[in-house]
Every structure is written in C-alpha cells, then in structure tokens.
Image 1 (tube, rainbow, N blue to C red):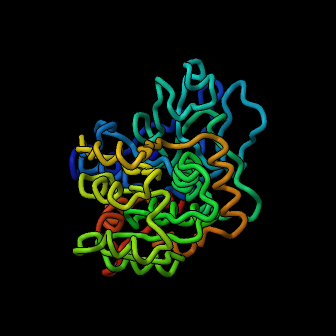
Image 2 (cartoon, rainbow, N blue to C red):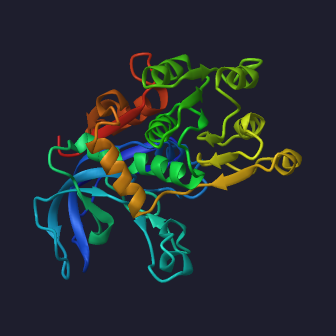
Image 3 (cartoon, one colour):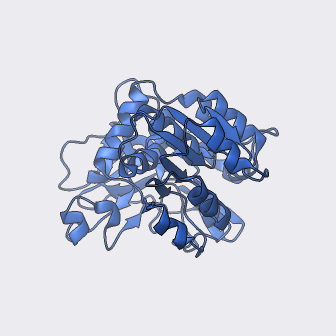
Length: 342
C-alpha cells in the first residue's frame, strides 16, 4: 500500500509498504478523510517536542472498516468510523480515574505509531467511534480537532455569560471560539497576526478581532469586551501569547494553555499570584469531549464547509502540506484534508 512518510525535516515521501493486518482487538480502516494538524506541520519541520521522525502521520481520520481483528465485536467491514487516536494503557492512575488523556504511557496514532495517511491503517477497535448517519467523512474527520476544543472549554469551567479571548485563529483557535460560544460565552475576542484569519474569525462569530502585534491590542480587547476576559485560551503558546494572556485575564480569571509550546516560557508569576489567576493546561480529550464534538457537528453548530479549506488525493500530500502551512491562493488555510481513497 501507499503511505506518506515524514522522513526528516522538510522531507516528505510517498512510499510503498505492506498492508497491515489487524491484530487482536484491532480494526483495519481505509481512511476517506484525514486532516493535517498543526502538530503534523511541526513534525514535518522536526520541531515537535513529542514526535520523532520518521513517522507516518495522520490522526484526524474518518473512513470505513476494511478488516476486523480477532476478538472484536460490534464492528463489521464497511462501517463508517472516526478515530480517537489516543492509545492508553488502561491501568495507570489516570486511566483508572477516567482522565486517560493523561495516561502515563500515552501514545498517539500518527505521532508515536503509524497514522492514517496511508491506503489503510490499524488501531484498537475501542479507539473508534461510529460516524452518525448523514455526517460526511470531511465532517467526521473534524471531530478530533474539535474534541481538543471541547475539552479545553470543559476544563476552563463555567462559560455561561462569560467574556472570552482566544489567542490564535488557526483551526484549533477557531474551533475553540465556536465551542466556547456553544458553551454559553456571550462575548469573544480573537487575535491573530494574519488579517485573513482575523476576518474569518469575525465571519464565524467573533465579537472582537485584533492584531496581537499592534500597540494597544490588549487595551483594545479589554475595552471592546464587556469586561476583561473571564477565560483566555492561548492556542499558540509562545512567550508573547502567554504574556498577553496573563495581561488580558480578569482578576480571578483563567488562562488555558491549549497550544503546544516549542519549549520553556517565562511566566509573570507575580501577576498570577496577585490576581489569583488560574493557569490551566489542557491535553487532548476523553470520550465525553469527543461525544460533545460529534453532537456539535450533528447539531449544525460547526460550519464544516467553511472550515475545510481544500482536500487533496494522497499522491498530492506534499502540496497539501504546503497549503496547510502557507495557505491556498493567497488565503490562509483553516483545515486541509487528504482523501486516501480518491
């Protein structure tokens, strides 16, 4: 079969490989839609702190069951499924308490194991969810990144009536904005240095948009929201954005660190202490976050057609990665997907 391999920094190849047989408890799936994630782009540049090259990427995946391993019940060939890619041990303290996104031996399909950017891939049957009737594969492949957003919104706490700021208008930032709105946030500001991304955020419902590189951006956001944000979601996680997040946060408010940082950052601890801020990390998701994401898409809260910028066949993977990194026809990409069966 064909598989996309991120071989080294900036080097992507399409290679032939053996068709994997599903082991006990596994499904083999032929993905029909696979999203390119910011983590995939960081891995492609060999800049992701938790992904080593070479790797077959692809964890935002939906497709159809091709073969069923021994001991699997409840799935049959042809079933439409979407992937929840976190691989867990089920036995550590975090798994036993239901917080399996923090599993002590966590691995992720397409990051530490071979992913879905291939003609077929295998994963444990328990890691798949059925695609609801009527949901497109493109929409189903959005469930994974949306689950990151629904998890971040859940761990942020009560958002009903809240003012919120989202730093970064990439796919995760936009999905976080939409998830926060669905959770009851009444006023949302979104920042991004790219004008096209800010404009899309506005079209998708942001009340305030701002260029974070402008002088006075923090003050402008504060003045245009009803009050300083109750919750700030940092979907970028650089020194600049963490400084802005803390500066924006309401006394007693919460800063949610959602983006994957490339390294250490300095925290203005005196402000965290003096303002009684809560600094909250967020990592992946658990089943209830995935189910919430599925429900939001089913209910029409997520405009899939405006978020999936373009799709490509597998043999154009290099072009798809360029589009995800650089945009399409001069416009920034939101979500680029590949269609391995096309």
